[in-house]
Figure 1 (spheres, rainbow, N blue to C red):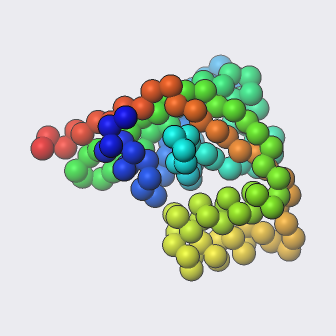
Figure 2 (figure 1 turned 135 degrees about the vertical axis):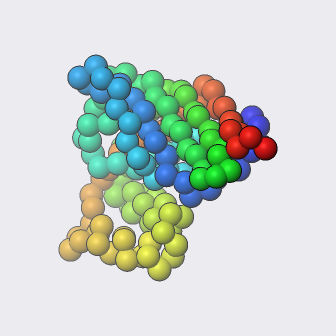
Length: 140
């Protein structure tokens, strides 16, 4: 893999997750993610539309890009949908919130997300890349 792709995937950039919906149409959703051990990890509430769709058809893509100078990475592969038990879900979402919002704002986000109790179990989307491509369209 191009080391520039690895660098971009490790930055706190919003990912655009693409998949085929249960209605047969393509869907693209902005997601927070973590890139770990060569996989894209995304936490989601249990039974979310994207989870149901990806169980039906696990093929997906993720794109991340920068502002100028424009650089982007596309990832395509299959997604495994796994149960994310509450303790691990809290840990994962806390880490991802800090990654995207910083420690202070991330902590506030988690307080609101937790509400008056625990969030319960969730699901983890594990995108296993078949292909990762890096593009530099800055003209440099």
